[in-house]
Image 1: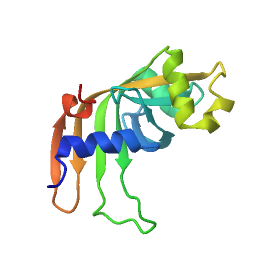
Image 2: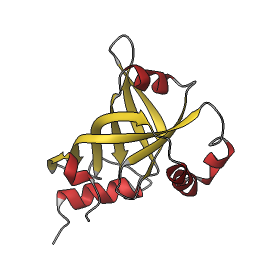
Image 3: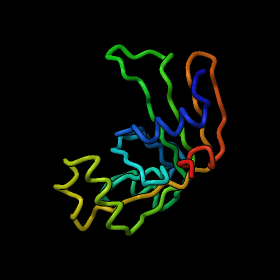
Image 4: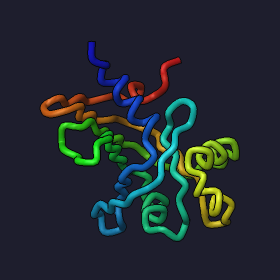
Length: 149
């Protein structure tokens, strides 16, 4: 039996090390950037962003955003691999334990995690769209993207 869509989405979130972040620029156009990604124990997506970056400035002005997580594991990527888009809002979060969790996931972030211009952002998912393979499209609710209790 193949995994259910929420289970697949949670696995993609838990395993993701990076994502494409789309934020809204001041002109209303989307801006995409590649960011490192980790998750809190409940699978809340976490990003460590510099205040000097465009995407952080965009999120401060308008917290609406989306993440695209690519589940491709093969060297030759194709569109049959699973991928997840999470839409929601991102906001800075002051939580030293979650910064430590982020750095444990991305040891290279240790060099800048303590810089004054870096902030941990937590994403509050509002919905998800899982493409689990060709023609396998599943709309998800925010609750589908949280760790099961």
